[in-house]
Length: 264
Image 1: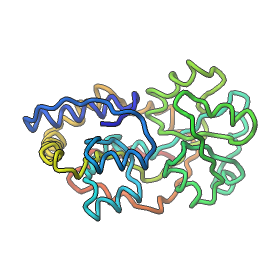
Image 2 (image 1 turned 135 degrees about the vertical axis):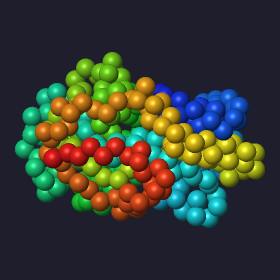
Image 3 (image 1 turned 90 degrees about the vertical axis):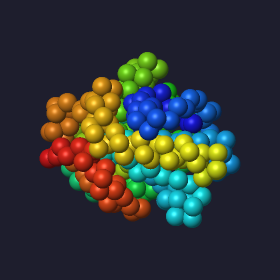
């Protein structure tokens, strides 16, 4: 399977689902690849499981039967609450942002191939994609003025990316005045290859079990927490449309997992 260090809670949820289904399986990390290569390897059955946000390409493949999806919201909806990394020296410049028109004066950075970039572009925001980001390398583009901010999920930023990035670049920080929101969900994707048939059935059955009996929330709360109120409740919120799907992509049987906290 292909994963990231920041997704340890998702791996724990996979293990919980497999245990609930009584299906023994060893999950082994696959090398990082581009999205196109990832999909090729998944289709061929060399990668069996992905933990990635829903994208138009992946949804089209599901409709064609070329990919399997378990639409359980692994981040409980928080992946669509986006906070931005900025340079220490630029943090005050974002405090004047009050609406989408203000935001359109800035340039957003995102990882190469991320569909989030298309969400921002659809909103009329200039967006540039960078190849290297996992260790905060985008700081170089910030220093030269190519990008102004780099949004990531609020919860994952507080839990993982902020301390991780600052190990490499002390001048990076999370700005505290702005929150971007749009429907954005990380799902479980399973290879369509026959070798993954039993795994898919076990994961689907197992997630149905742990989502119904409360174990999903128990596992999630052991490894992730709702961001503290003072990290988001006083921010300016800018809601963006996702041009590819809305909240109804999450099936009714899983919607109770979505955190209902509101921001204002």
